[in-house]
Image (cartoon, rainbow, N blue to C red):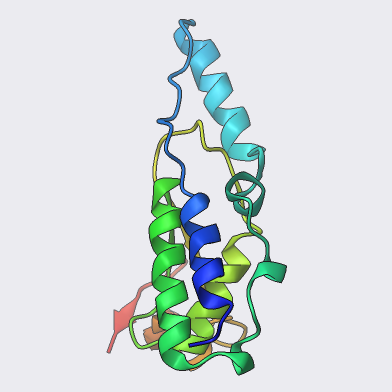
Length: 155
């Protein structure tokens, strides 16, 4: 095992959110809706800011074994869930890509006080430019050309 891995796992464990999100103060319903709109449109900082991690903390894929990438990825996923954040990636995604996309998720802006689960999805729903490439399910979705509505047919 790479000697840096235990230290990185400790840093990831230290990045968990242990405090429960605060509830909104007593306000009128319209004020609460406005507060929610602001939080959704302009979240505070990146996940990395809140958990104390950045991409620079993670070794490049070519320096790690697949089992090390899986171990780190699992730890990062669990830490992200403590911040009400989940990264939606295909099941058959290679460990190198899972590792890479999870690290990229550290740059996503979040609002930890906004208590609902946020799912990060890297699929653009356009197979030609999808970041998930051949592993994404969007390549199986075909638009229908007979009306103004899009009809999805999954094969």
